[in-house]
Image (cartoon, rainbow, N blue to C red):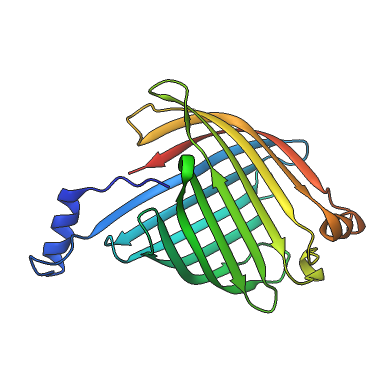
Length: 234
């Protein structure tokens, strides 16, 4: 993910906290990759996915939040928050260590330690690969690419895979049964890169034992939605 740094604000923050003149400037930023309304076959939903960061080039503290809440019921279909530390390990990649809390409505809470990498792969694919470690471990891989159709019009395809590494029957997750989420969004940079409204599609499907568990519980194994939202970055 690309962040815009505000040197003037960073310098002010550094002076407020009394940082020495020779110290690295504090940087901070906020980026909501998804802040959208999903039109679905069943209940429509509000969805968000954002990172807020503060730190330096050598060490960044990141609060990551992802969630989905039903439009009519107000119930959380998913709610996840992470506190992450990022440190560079190469020119284009950071290592990640942190903690994650998943606390949706109607399902047991889960807490994990997080270990991963994040950065830009060849051809400028944005990559996130994280291992979540606890009594219910899983692996998550995310990739996204920004294709410039014009200077302001951008097509962003994305894919996310969640792979349970151990059965978690209480949350309808089976070891080796992945869930894929594929999306494509066309955005327009309305105010530089700070505000970019978009429209797109999103499709999610479970496979293997996870799909079997969902069917047995009377839940859908897949979901398609039309999405309308905006990216926000500052």
